[in-house]
Image 1 (cartoon, rainbow, N blue to C red):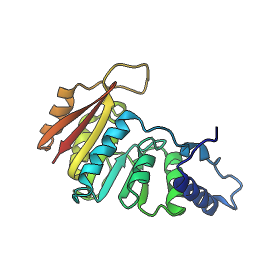
Image 2: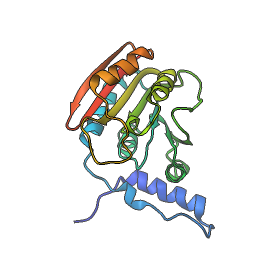
Image 3: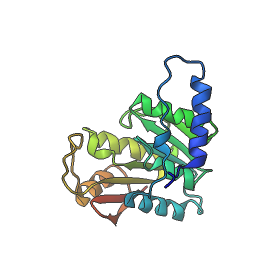
Image 4: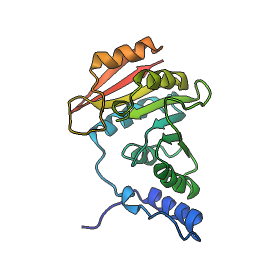
Length: 207
């Protein structure tokens, strides 16, 4: 069976890669396999469904995606909302290099930035929505994460975290619903709601 791809994203990535590395002897390996189309994960479907509800109402014209990683959420987001202005930050340079190839290849609404959410210094209320999927469990200073996300967001912050212990050594926190609710309310959010996803917590905080 022939493997399916996020074709427009893959084509843009290849174009951008060639622009950036055509004459480079030390070019990074091309990562076409990152764009293989898989079924969206349940937590990704839930978040995309939430965005489907607020984008037509004008409540989300710009989005900051924190810790975009391999694009598990970012690529379906770009697929479903090709006009949404998306800033993607990640602490790993090779992730940003891949996303910069996408931008250079024609995904003009994607703005990759090397950065840490705890210290990302964009102006206050720069983004209608901030998404942090599978991010908070990795970061030691959760207060700093939440404070800056609240500062940067105009309307909503969307978070997903594991709901059960696992064997990933990079997961240094395990949050309950009450943990998340307390963190976001005390840092300025008006209300929060939770959506059920197997083995994960998905929370929407409203400002």
